[in-house]
Image (cartoon, rainbow, N blue to C red; front, side, top):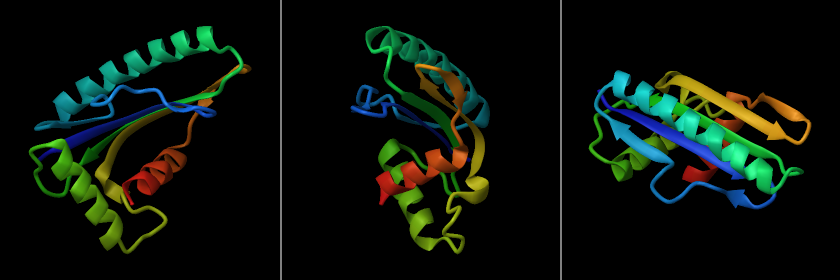
Length: 131
């Protein structure tokens, strides 16, 4: 069973802050995906601290999600195609990813402090990006 880890790190005013290739990774096991998720969360926390030092007034959003793919995928392109297909074929348009999500963590960091970033908001943004 394949697992896909997708992360997002953005400045709400200027957009994506991740380097190409950082946002999506495919793993053969859930354990490997969870290890990568923990690593990404640490990197994103450091990124927020660095970005906050450069722009103290900005608002940053960072999140990481693990999907259990319905079919095995070998690479990022296949994973994205399968997730697009899930969106197209779902019978629950309010939650097209449903049980595919096995882990999620997100933060919205503003000048006034950090708060949890809702999974629903993250997945809606991902859905918009995929379609």
